[in-house]
Image (tube, rainbow, N blue to C red):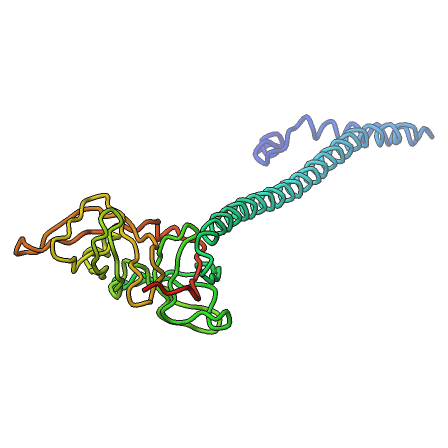
Length: 282
């Protein structure tokens, strides 16, 4: 193997080796003549590309730093805007809730003007009972607000929601009118027919309650309004309970009963009012 083949095999270009040798020989010759300028020229020739490379690298690094700095700035700005948007949305929700609450109190004021005998306590719905055998929820007031078992619960429009069945210091459980334990004296507004509102499991699943034990000869029709009769003194008289959704008959086909739909959307309740005291009408 000759020198050329050896250099080619090892990946070294012959021209580069020759050029290096020529530079070294030439530099030595000039030095012998007392001329050191070539060394400086060679040094300059070598340094120039290096300086350009260093300069380019510096510019590239500055560009990367600028990009990262701007990126961090954008991330910080994005987080700030996101926080401001969240705060604005929260304020909007609070504003809407305040408007709705003001409207409820305005409606309640109109109701109280017609029922000045009632003592009412406002409460928030805080949780619903998760059970297939009950339809109830927890409110934010209890014994500390003079709320007691048996108290009637209504909406701001005077629509009956249910009855307090359990009380703690700062909470109470309310069973709604469609709960299985419902037992309320009722009458039909259109003709004065009296009956009893009782809980029914099948109807509860459909969001309704049963109007049964109607007086002999009483006639009821779909769309009739059902109200509290006030009998027994457990509930104020004249509270709207709901409307008759359909009229049905018992298995024998003789006794009629009504399927009553509540006068409010029970599952959408946010705030209710507990009737702590009222004038009993016999």
